[in-house]
Length: 174
Image (cartoon, rainbow, N blue to C red):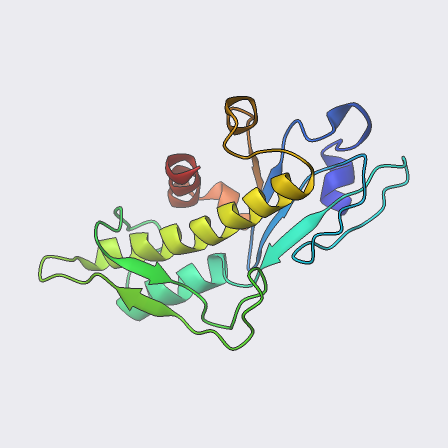
């Protein structure tokens, strides 16, 4: 939550800019005037009287890096997944709460490339984080599909935010 303080969340910055932290885990957080009781969220209290709801996924950049390694590709050597879908729950999952889940790959075709498989890993991890963001927004009383909410900028932080493929995948899917 020190990132929330460093980014100036709370006070005047309430929910203006949800944050996605793309690291080993994918973390989404924001600031709210009310304490969330949503079971999928962790709630923290800030010193300024606001709350910092947070959702965390287990499988983000580490899962994508594992897929890149298995394919012998550099993490930026990617293409959109096409019909391939990769659910990257390599170590179970926290949001949604599926501790025994495992990864799943579907939609392979003869023309599926290794770059598309890696792209599918990015997409699977990004969708999981973006679904956690929707949960966070709803818990804060916001409709993620409302035009005024969907138009709000997302702040990307963490190691993944430095990668072109991560930024492009989140941009494309959000």
